[in-house]
Amino acid sequence: MNFDYTDDQKALKDEARRFLSARSPTSVVRGVLDNADRAYDEALWKAVAEQGWCGAAIPEAYGGLGIGHIELCALAEELGRALAPIPFASTVYTFAEAVMLAGSEAQKQARLPALAAGKLIGALAVSEGPGRLAPGAVKAAVVNGRLTGEKIPVTDGDVADVAIVLAVEDGAPGLYLVDLKAPEVVRESLSTLDPTRSAARIVFTGAACEPLGDAGQGFDLLERIQDRAAVLLAFEQLGGADRCLEMARDYALERYAFGRPIGSYQAIKHKLADIFIKNEAARANAYYGAWALAADAPELPLAAAAARIAASEAYWLASKENIQTHGGIGFTWEADCHLYFRRSRHLAVVAGAPRVWKARLVERLERRNATA
Image: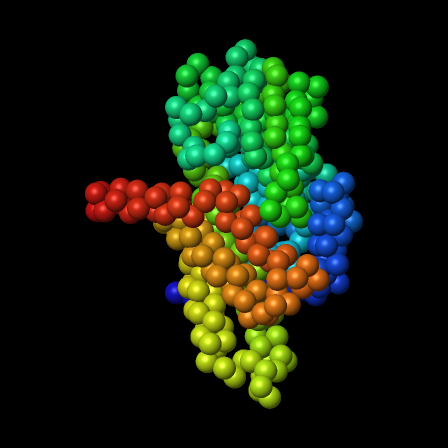
């Protein structure tokens, strides 16, 4: 079985790289990082939406391109490589996938066309603070169609128009759609390690909401949404990890010490080799996850967990070893190394930390083996 991109998908990927090289250089990333009043780059978001990327996996019947999830994975890889400072992951990987997976026909008609056009930014609000999410720990509650509670942190919650919120109604967990511009919603921007991807604390005080999916199935549906997002995030992480390896390799070839390129020294060779091996392992798992996602295969839960773990570890190693390879200059603000380090840390926790996914992978393997 060949998991590689087709020629058409490779052409899409190449075109996306050229587009982002022109529209999202690191100067654009720094423009958001250095300005506390900018949560994302509005011009880049508009340009990406005009390319149709927000609707890549959304069916044509709902205003999308309908080209598929493999193509969306290819775009995610290039967005990760470019460190695009836009709310693409929250809107496309989680919110749009959730609506397509569990939304009613009316909910799809109301939101998917706007999502595909980049006119609606979405967010997923599930966390209520530190610790692993568990059914008995959810305090946000819905009574008579009104949501009360607090969610922190919510990635892109300060710029999103609408959110999917995990809450309890009559003792049963569920997912609910909430308009974040309602007067009963108060948002507070948070300081994070990666300011190019914003986060917020959101307080709901009786905000109107509508259920997404079946009542009482909140956690089961949330896992399915996170599995789909995990694969797409893995490609974004892979793109960043590959770029870190390129940066480290290029610097090792141009930086001389004792009359030789530092890349000729065994210590640097080993660093680069270790990054390459991790990246290739992550790529294999990501490709398998992409196949499972596109085919909606029964293997998706296992493939998603493996892709998520491998990509998180690869990006973490690549980003920190890139700094080390650059030596003293790698730790400076002027070097771009820290931009990738920040993003690697952000993406590692945005949909559940690696330890959570490792526990989930073990549980799923045990469940599969018990039924084999």
